[in-house]
Length: 544
Image (cartoon, rainbow, N blue to C red; front, side, top):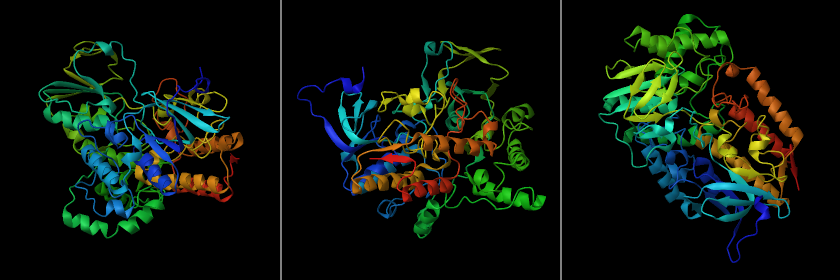
């Protein structure tokens, strides 16, 4: 039965809004703030019990952001002026406090409905509105539906035989207990070595009696170069905030200070190349990923030079040669940077400890999960706690897990079964008045959350204002525009090294998922095309 086939319960109030936003993270809260400023009636629904989006759900040991501040915060002076970070890369608990600060400054939570999971939404063509249903039975009508769910809204759980039989605590990192889980003195197993896996492993290694790490593909993790921020440092930084935020908004990388050398890695001397690599390494974070030479991510020879620098730096930290071969092999497991690098602090030193075992599941595949542990082809690894750091059905999963139906009754899941097609990564043909933020075929994974919330979010706010001023009640991507945009993304992929890795950038981590580049790598190039469309009266969209 479709949503519009069901009449509302007699006497039941149905809220009618200009815009309903799904998600109370950076994007959702910024949209709420800006749309409310423009006089729109707007509300945010979020499944979590608090503000923060991913930072409500990510509370596992060691969880912290991989974009350094002040890149990773809002640029509004009323927010940053009296907020003080304690670390260059804040942890999940400090990020939660930041969201409470944002709420206090911008007075947002009165228009946020927490503990409200959107389960279905259908466009009512007669009314020109979205009918949205949530798990609490609420029904809401809105002219515009704006999903702001991030790219990691749906956790991926591999189909391990016997997983449900494990007798001890077993959690995906994205569904960690809000009151924590003590791993002290326990036998802990971690499946997966992506970003969350790296962070959990670092912490578990300090307290577990035995830590067993199940690795499929080596993680090319970069040195975080974490540091505390004292009062003097913060005061000096804030003198530059206005200029830094202007630079951030104009950056191709969404970082004001991560800028690649315009030269090729192949055209400089070995000494010069080492100096550039070393300088980026010492800066830490994503500087070594996106801030060395212009051709590292699209030229195989240049890419190999970056990998070899990383490899030699990393192997020097690992005592056992066989372990080093698995964590930092002599030959790259895939081109450097074609999978999103994790940031680490003491990850590689963990494997020097006597209480840590590394299991290569390509050599010893996981056969089943038992009540007492993980059985591989070689043996049973007995465990008290099992951590699933198995990643996400990224980009599209958050959308397809909701029953979102367009004007013809077709779901997004059905529409995207053979691949994503959007206009500018924000709109889908057949789904009028649906404007996605931080979604597929926009920069998303190559743009930190607060930056995209502002530069992409302002475009959506301006669009809704334009529609109101021109007395238009409907905007929809055209089929031709979506086809052109999809081809453009494919061309970008072909010109890069990204397709050479089985990454979540390509949708390749989910069995059966259509393989395609899901993100636009250059923020400024992307925003130029968005602005050009708007300047031409929103070319690529049908307005009425």
